[in-house]
Image (cartoon, rainbow, N blue to C red):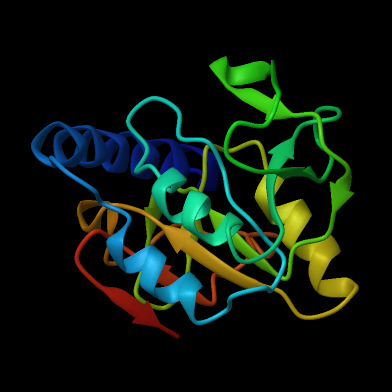
Length: 183
């Protein structure tokens, strides 16, 4: 099996686990993420708007926005790093790809990046959707200085091992609805 086929199979299995976890979970799944971000009040951070059955970081991002700058990603072109624009609750949003919306605020550079994912390992490996947006973004941000990459996922998305490439950017921390995994 090729690496691409291994990744496809790992994605399919993880997405099925995520869908099941999302259907079973009720309530505020971002409690641990709020606790983590509270320790970095005022530090520029960026998150994401959940799509499909991703775990939703918005409650934690709304809380963080009361204490410092928060950004959301914008896709400027295929196969390029993401650009982050300032966001706050109630900010103007415009339709974007993948059924999401993007803020119209000024461009910002996060020092903390809350990263969506399909699967993760306890060693910080992350499997995304396959577009490489977050891998390129983390590479670019880390070239310019430290950035804390916080993977946010349901615990059910954990995998024993994942097929990886040298360009797959590692996470520094993983937060689930049940725990914080510091690496």
